[in-house]
Every structure is written in C-alpha cells, then in structure tokens.
Length: 195
Image (cartoon, rainbow, N blue to C red; front, side):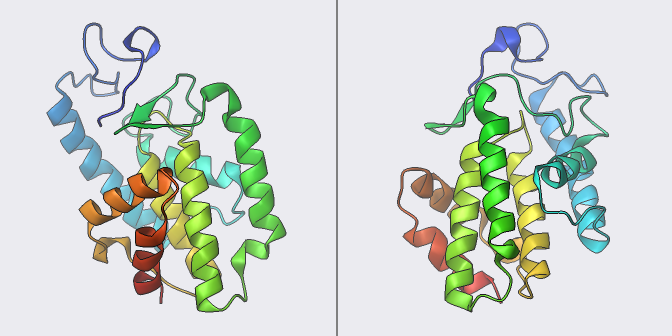
C-alpha cells in the first residue's frame, strides 16, 4: 500500500496501518495478496464487459466500487483523509469533488479525446493521467481504478492499450516524475503503448 496517512482517522486497525476490511485480515502482506487477487479478477471482468460508459466521476467511482467492494465497505467512496505516497501529496480530501468536476467536465468538453491524431491523443491521455493521479480520490486502489478507466476511455476513442504489457516499475518512476512536472518518460511510454 505505502500511503502516508493519519492513523487516528484512517479506518485502520488500532496500532496498525492495515485498512479495516471485510475479511478482518490484520496482516498487511496478506491483505495485499488478497486485494491483488480479488481486484485482478474484477479488473478483467470490467474490461470484458464495462458496466458504465459515461466517462464522468460517477463512472470513475463505479469502477473503484466494482474492483474493491468484496474487500472494503468504502469501495467507490471518496476518501476523507489526506494521503501522500513516495513524496507526492495528493489533492486534499476536501477539494476532491471540486477538482473531479473540473477534470471530468474538461474530458467531456474535449469529446472524450475522440478523433484525435495519435500524438495529440497521447498528449491528452498524459495530461488526464497526471490530473487523475494527482486527484487520487480513494484511500487505496487509485492506480488500478485509473488504469481500468483509461483503458476503457482509450478504447472508446478508437485506440487500444494493454497496461499488462507496460513495465510497472518504469510506470511508477514515470508517474513520480510526472507528479513533479516532468512528463517526457510517461509520454514516451504512452506513445509506444497506445496503438
């Protein structure tokens, strides 16, 4: 997981950083394993038969709910605590809804990036990736939600991507760099991965 949070208000088991979960798993490594398996199955299910195609914030939250409802009561709900990861601070909890409104309003006004040439399309996807990463609306599972949403959005615009073919370590490095305003590596990865 790896998020820095306030343990007093964080829905964790007392004295731990383990999120309260429906299986009452109190070991972080075990929880990560179970979460990975459950979310991977749901990830594939959603991409094979998307449940929503509105491409708004409700759609984004619906993906998170679908991926994690087996494990967390708060699946699909916007976080209420501040979080950071690997030196990156994400949107303060009280600003998430307002920021999401702006992000998804712009996406709609750009016609979901349809009918753009490849380079222009990749530029828009990089920008959308960066702003949704900064938003980080959920306590856990932001990256997986983002990848499902982006895959569906990219396919909706007539392109394709398979995040399983992308080196996850390199993507993490590119994501951290993009959070610091350097998007070259992320753009190169998307140029090569979006067909």
